Length: 90
Image (cartoon, rainbow, N blue to C red; front, side):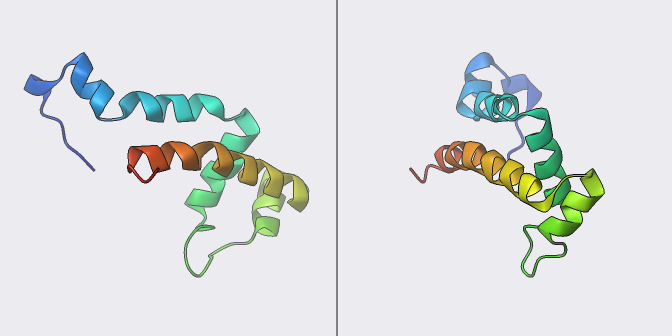
């Protein structure tokens, strides 16, 4: 987490802080992908060990487990390259 003092806030600061990449990431996801990804994060799906299963997430949203899994996989495939770039891993 990086705190940017408001007196130093400029367009260049926002651009170099990857603010726009994060905004773009949000716009890449469909409504269902956002819903499934957000729920997975809130319910501990990505924790080790997992605190929930894809079946439980799917049931909570009212989807088939395979459909929920597809939405989650597609969301991850869109978000991970952006996160990698932000972290300068690529």
